Image 1: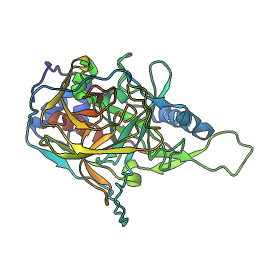
Image 2: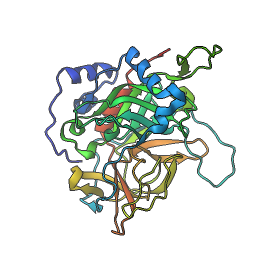
Image 3: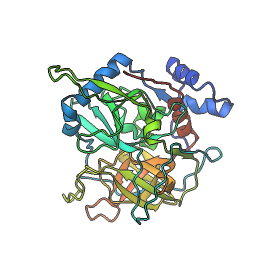
Image 4: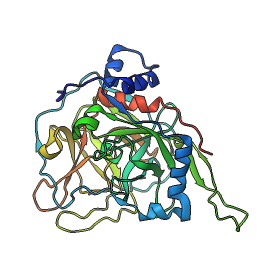
Length: 365
């Protein structure tokens, strides 16, 4: 795959990321980490405050959040710009925490790993995107879109009060709330806002949940440790440099109306699409996209950051992350979203992922 920008080493920030991934030997891997832009690490005390922000008043802040809306009244027309190509050999890391279902239903079993990331944007508004838990050394990694992590307006790596809630449903966090500790994006996204690298991997602290108090006179919120993310919901695998024209399941929480005003989704429960990735890369001049992969799907905004899973097993509820929803398109120009696209996952994507997966987090309480 062609590289569109000259990539400049990041000095101290890169050195820190490289130290975190020191166990990954090899010149190629070291070069991959040159493209990694890490955030500052969120301290445990700050993380405790973030957890309380979302959990107090029975999750009222979670319910008040709205999906991250860019411009859903006008979507790009999908265009192809040539075939995607790999930068090294294809590779993959297997999923963990598989759950076998005995159901004989023909319906697709939704993965436990999928949920919403919540944050406060540059305007002080509570927002959310879709995301998924993926496997990592410390079972604490979340994958989502770069624009669901990086605040381009203030050039800040981790959006304020960032948390992941797997299985989120109407203010409820069945497996707890996981506060982001450190985020990792591609250098091109952080510097150039290049949506060809619109993905992010975030290490999260152990989950926290509301602790039932035996003293009704105490007004303070009590929380307890909910354990590691991967132990609770498992983690999807990850794949890179895979061939195109492969079948994927895509999951997310769409809510936005179509450009014509039709509102088929509520954003309350996750939805899915199934399709084959395009044989050519997808382009969009507005977002500097030249190398995306497309898939036919009618999900709208709110599904941003949702996982594209290769070789998804409905019985095990796991597969291999091979993309995240980034952009939405109206291919037949009828004012309805009919295509979505994802950055192509290559070895540089893997380098960003390995940096996040090497970060230990631990408990908040």
